[in-house]
Length: 65
Image (cartoon, rainbow, N blue to C red; front, side, top):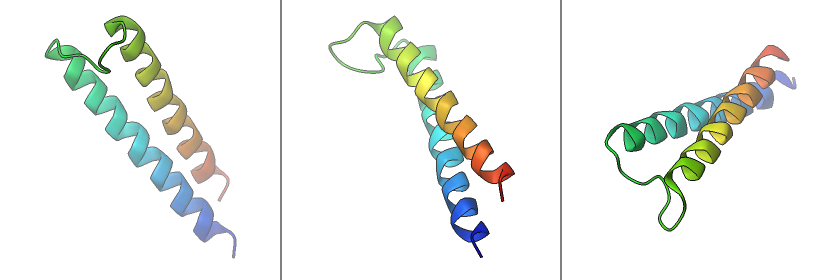
């Protein structure tokens, strides 16, 4: 009964994390800023950490189904 919301939340976190990671990698590879007005290294690092955290949270949700 509770597996439906866990699957939904896991997929949402996983899709967000994957999308953010791909977007950040694309921006860094092309030399474009990840966030305007912030250090390029710091913004890429924070975005990457957030993406990996979202992927980890999505995996945790999906393993607890």
